[in-house]
Length: 176
Image (cartoon, rainbow, N blue to C red; front, side, top):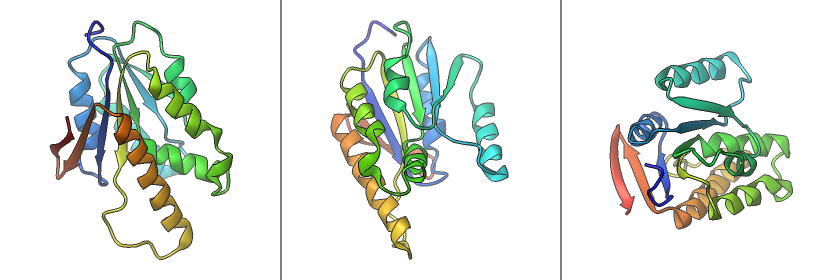
């Protein structure tokens, strides 16, 4: 499918909503596939999540682990890649918040990412969590993260050709 127009698809949903599985299903139609993983194995629970996601992907994916510089990861993709999945933007945002101690104004990686989205070398499926539908977080750090994730998702959705919300494992097209 490399001859088709490059597109950006945002798949967003709550925790365990089926968004990663749906992103993998969308990528099935493509030949040369890359999976850009953002998670860091910071504890046993996260190591288990990473391993579970690895087992969900088949051998047709080349995996790139990039917890911070997604713009560089996108720009560095080989020109023969048909599709790349980035999973997930909210984990990436959390990595940056930790790296910069909550002050994302210092995180040039965010603008680098948006610059790379302007000229992607292939079609992209971006997976992100919708964190604004739940209860209001009790502490300011969590509220700050929720707000930053909402802002990030809005900016990505504005650039995306398609936005798909997953609810209970069901994909709902929000933007076509």
